[in-house]
Image 1 (tube, rainbow, N blue to C red):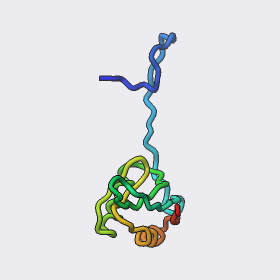
Image 2 (cartoon, rainbow, N blue to C red):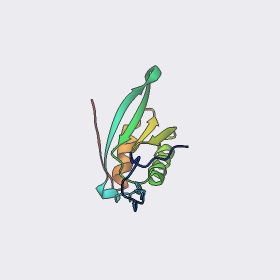
Image 3 (tube, helix red, strand yellow):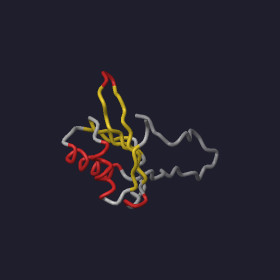
Image 4 (cartoon, rainbow, N blue to C red):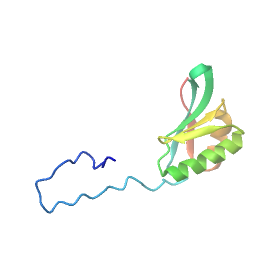
Amino acid sequence: MKNNKGGIVFSTNPDYQYQEENNEFETLPNAQQNFKIWLDRKGGGKVVSRISGFIGTDDDLNTLKKKIQNLCGSGGSAKDEEIMIQGDHRDKILAFLIKEGYKAKKAGG
């Protein structure tokens, strides 16, 4: 097992105590979120709607992903502050996010 201590290997200070940083941060309120909705092509020419710009916890990201999946009736995934929904559902997603009080717009060509 590796200890991930942010690159600290050795300290000359005999009283040094490593303190882990908490990378979890609060989710911004809906009005402060700024989403961009992209249309991407994945391997095999499959189309996905990608929503980027989420700032918050993974739990809140997954909750939003589930709401969008139910709205679109499609599968998807959420990771790295992005949500990917199978298919071209940009218009539905945009309308839903604006109705929920988020700032959102279509991006890309």
